[in-house]
Image 1 (tube, helix red, strand yellow):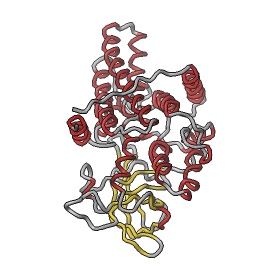
Image 2 (spheres, one colour):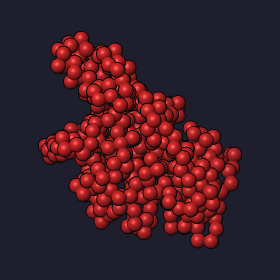
Image 3 (spheres, one colour):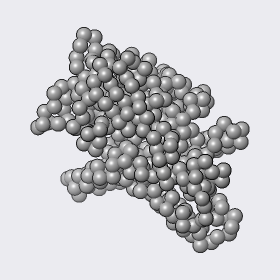
Image 4 (cartoon, helix red, strand yellow):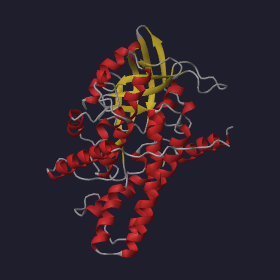
Length: 384
């Protein structure tokens, strides 16, 4: 049986000082009315202006080389920043995917032209990306995807459809997994490639899929004879599946997999403390203990990523346990405090509860369904 060990990370005094710097910035901006706290803000909190503010401070692409606009800081520094942004419920959705996975993918596999063109724009908070994976009949089984790209002079013509595409209506580009060779039933993962599609290009149309809250985050993206030039192919033609799986390592292990409902937990703890409700605080303490364990696992994966280690198994485990925890927070808080949940409520607790409950069904789907993740974990621990 394969042993899984995650490193124990201890923050340095400099890193603790950086945390206080970020927290002070967020407290100040919240007092100014720059943003209001929301649950699940990394998925639904869009603000191009706030992203530009972070870009000016060097807080987007902060681990990337300086030659591409980065700050060359550690993965742990980025983790600290991410924790504080999510804990505050700040509106970070606009640049989220570009910072978390599209940029690192381009750093690893992109051409110099691609790096020079895209990465500085991303770090300034001026270029946003979406990820084109799922299709109507190819959700968890991505090997069955039908979106195809046919070679033509100077590039590719893409036809197909992507669904559940986060933030496509706000994004400038979409990294799209598509078939560039006919499907071979014996080797179903072969013949796929990753293309960067300009979402303003002719032939691209975007249709909203609304949350239960009425918010618009997910989308259907239709691609009809969309031309993609050769210089927008990422990595090797035909190697898209392996490249996409590498990209998912960045997606599945971050603090966003454990902190989507943290603002609700924090507000509940504040109210229970005011009421001196010892029994309620004891229940919150149990949630905090689970959260701390998951946080140590998650930051351990960040340390492994910085060391270039394979984190597929660890990231899948963190994502599975983390999203289940996120859902459990709303259920626990519901039993601890009287409330009238509503997304338009003036009282913070009522609004955060409504957001947490109504966003909750998506937690165990996005970034890989629970069933797929457990399959990865089962195969990983069983391998020699």
